[in-house]
Image 1 (tube, each protein chain N blue to C red):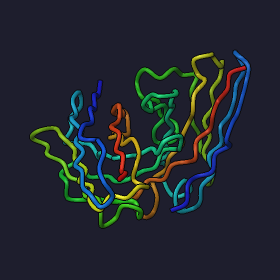
Image 2 (image 1 turned 90 degrees about the vertical axis):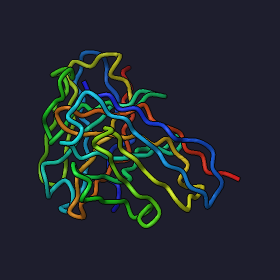
Image 3 (image 1 turned 30 degrees about the vertical axis):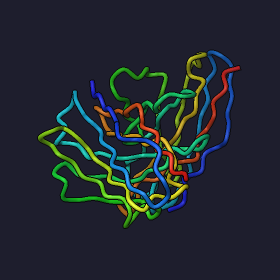
Image 4 (image 1 turned 60 degrees about the vertical axis):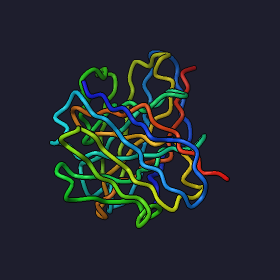
Length: 115
Length: 110
């Protein structure tokens, strides 16, 4: 069973940076596309970014393009999201997720952007 | 990329069947068989229920089924149970190589 555990969330000022991590176990981590999805308070799910198995292909939602960078370290079974130039509207719980037969979601990590 | 369209709420009595629709365009749902559904209870992380239109991950009851016709996907829950009460989200891969979610549907079991 896939296990995904996010970390790195917290309070950051507008314009600041934060790096999220997602530790994966229970699947052949390197064989899967991995995603970041966020959910603002009392709002729906919004897809943020994805990365392919070897990290050579990445895609982003328009709202974060140029500010966020997704990456992965298959040796450490860990997915990352580097978030720069953070804005108040980036405040959300951030989930890492894998879709498919062995899919799963992490428990999420809260990012709050506020002065 | 605009969000997929889901009804804000649906309801049903225990034992009944309900259908949640998810409408997109020819650039997302209509373009690929990559439609997923997840369930989210209040304060909890989402749980995958359906992937690739109609496939269930292991452990998901066969009361949950998915389908697609044209630009619209559907999630059917038969034999409704109290624990099915939750928010449900559809998502689809798009021709822009991104994913898009629906706005979510709140299921109430009466």
